[in-house]
Length: 149
Image (tube, rainbow, N blue to C red; front, side):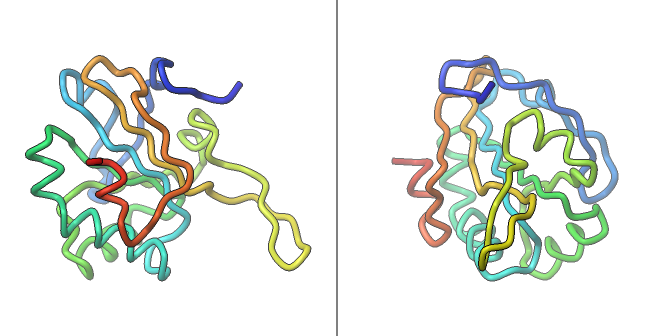
């Protein structure tokens, strides 16, 4: 069953780039931008992360916390954060369990070949843990404005 606006967000649990535990309940009473992206240090993912970084103050001012999730390791996330000075945590979902909870680990195809990968998707979760918006057509260059619109 796919998640939809109005659903309670799954209470995910994972580890961030510093191997600290992080879960949905850590953000109780706050709005959360939970964005799933395919891979650290790739052009689209870097553009998206840097757009969120460059507009981080506006997102904070609007009451949002920001957390990124990919299947990369905590070590890779740490390098990505250091290289691009990202001010928000990234969750290492190497076993894809959080992807599975949110329905973002999907079959994709390229050049006629099928494979499993991350559907670039952002979930905007309200203060009560309810999904307020799902952005499936992410504009990596303007992602913050899609959230703040």
